[in-house]
Image (cartoon, rainbow, N blue to C red; front, side):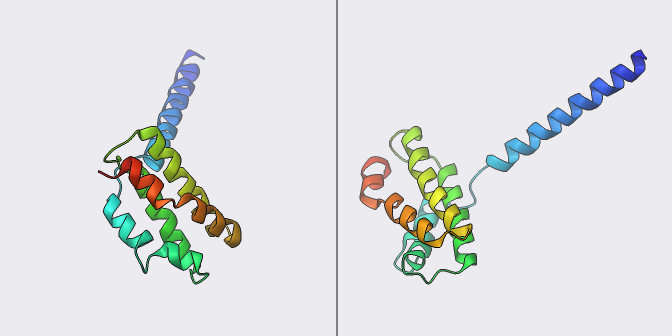
Length: 126
């Protein structure tokens, strides 16, 4: 009986650790793209955000934009508070998620509101 309890406890402990490890790696980690790379790909003249705003973005474009914004959030802002950075980048992520989920108009509206270049640059651009 003691052996059964000990092995069950061990298995539960391993399952909890495995779950924590998966959760930590899913949301964390280093960004694949720098802030500059994200700005070029997402907000440049021919960037993905403009494609979304103009109604010319494909589903693949929306997924790429979402991935870029997730990377943007993982970067450390050159200036300003990390809390404000997270809030601003989260708004971009949520808009892109709406677009990816098929709520194209809602996503476009949310992204247009969240992509406040001057507001973000005045606080965070180094």
